[in-house]
Image 1 (cartoon, rainbow, N blue to C red):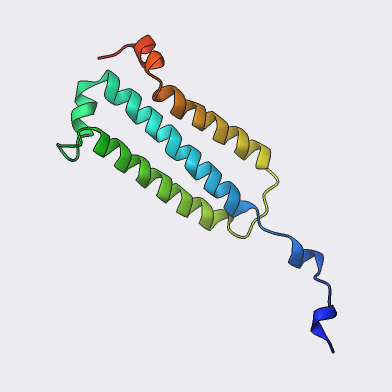
Image 2 (cartoon, rainbow, N blue to C red):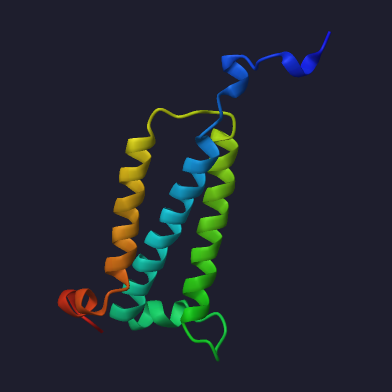
Length: 119
């Protein structure tokens, strides 16, 4: 009779970890895109001009706009795919995320850009 005395079943208590991993991986995608775009605008005058969406802001306007679009779109898509799943591949997703973040850091690190050749 009393519903408060019922214990939840194991299926009810299991939480979906997919949305968490989706958010982490999407943020890592955004980091990687920021690093790659920053690297390319530093070594290519043509790319720098292409990324200038708003003249007063310069090429930063294009880089940040595209980075945010990739982040939001990837988060939405990954969340839709993984929203009810509890993934057992957390280690793989974490490793991929760390690699993508490393790409983002290297792409925005001036000595790395100088080493590979500035425009």
